[in-house]
Length: 127
Image (cartoon, rainbow, N blue to C red; front, side, top):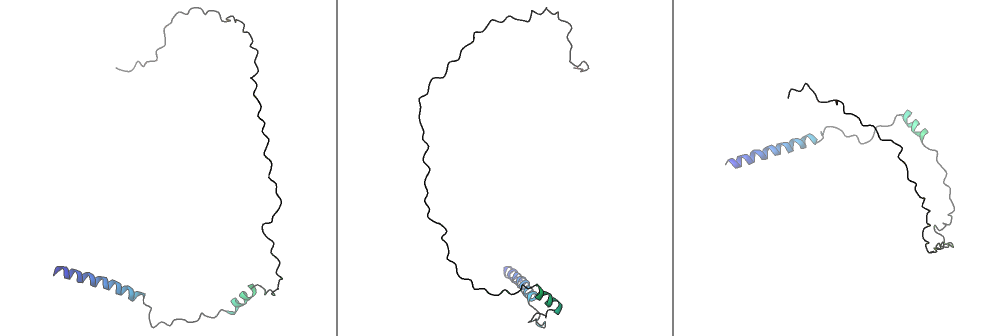
C-alpha cells in the first residue's frame, strides 16, 4: 500500500509540473496576432530609396575563349655537376724549431718566520 501511494504522489507532482509548464508556454487566445508588418514611415522609405544602388543596364558580353591553364613548353633539365676524385697527398711537414733552455728569472725567496696567525673563530660562543 505504501509503495502505491508513493508512486501516485510522484506521478501527480510530475504531471503538475509538466501541465503548468505547457500552460505557461501556450499563447493567450484573446491576443490578435499581427499578420502584416506595420507600414514604413515615408521619411525612412525615402532614405532607403536614396541608398539603393543605381540600376546598371545589362550588357551582353561576347564569350571569350578560355585559355588553357597549363601549356606545354620545351624544358631542359640541368646537367649533373662533374665530380673529379683526386688522390690525396700527404700533409706538408712543418719545420720544428729547437727550443733553448730557459734560465729561471725568479731567485729563491728568503725564508719567512711564522708569526701569530689571525683566528677567525668566535670567542663569544659559550660551548
